[in-house]
Image (cartoon, rainbow over the protein chains, first blue to last red):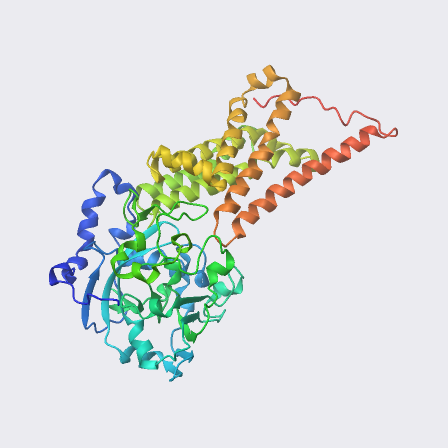
Length: 314
Length: 215
């Protein structure tokens, strides 16, 4: 069985005051020789913006590491529906209107429903979860998400015994997501999890960042966060959650199956064909650091994959 | 435009993207991942210079516009210098001289191998770019050697095509430009070859005297 240490010792939780003073750390860093290569956003910029969310508890799960800045997390994004360059999603975020917004819960469930996003936001107590995020492109961040466990939602809608996988779908609307006007990928973006992955206590549906409502470029109003998997599993701007019997197709593995797998677990031993996954660059740092198996969450999730060929776990 | 101003103006224009990169780096304007941004920009400009360096010859031979040929060497040397900076950035900034990793990369990743091959191909061209080398090799041999630039450009484009994840717009733009320039040269050479073999041809078209070395 999966055991979830939901309440880490208070000493592991980064006090809010500390992360709010994060710029002081970065200024100290900028004084060093590497300072030239630190982003301007680290020492200037507006800081967290948007409506605040009521957060019931805080869970620090990034080994006590300093979260990346608001500017880094909201200014360096892969969200091809808002443009393929890293700065595009922030620039084009205005075209994505997130109200009205409904999420269709369907498939093998006893209680299929069309949920309004604001109902969904009130349905579960929100938690802050500070997670590492490892992109398949070999960079990483530490991100203070706000959200609720996907498992909470799944239990409420009561999947049937035939539900073996959960399939997710992003909004399809080229007006609000203008990147969909060009077929860079097959639209809409789709992702999927095995049921045991979906109900794992680490798996989060995120609705916020740094205590604020999730910015559009980060996948507002609702996105998936699976911290032991590469970032592309974290499907953004979700409109459909479907419970299915067979493994659903996923966008990147359909596009290049030899480069992106269904599981996409962070695995330093399996290289991407075009680059090594052994190391990663934490945004804001100069030197690469070693990538951890399962992004450092192996103690909780490795047993999900017992008996599977580790070479398939990319 | 006064003749004397052509080269200094071209030099300033060609240098501008590199100056901007240095200024952006020094003032922290390279975004959240400045290491990747610097690498990408240097690669982009290398391909841009390389493509530009292919323009003067067909411009003269097909359109009869000859002043760009005076800039050809300068543009080519910018391409080589920028490519060398791109590689140095990968070596010293991106990988911080992890030579084992780099050797593995070049061996294992074909996109890195072709990029590296393109840069290596540019070395003899940069070395033999002087007037003295043109004389030493003889113009015809020098010209043949410098046709390697097309191979380098094609490998450079391939390096870019193989590198991107999904959005092929920019690499394909370079592929189109290089392909068009190469096709123009080939079509021109073919026409000339056919004409020189034709008994009706007055001749003289196929063998052109070497142009005076520019300055």
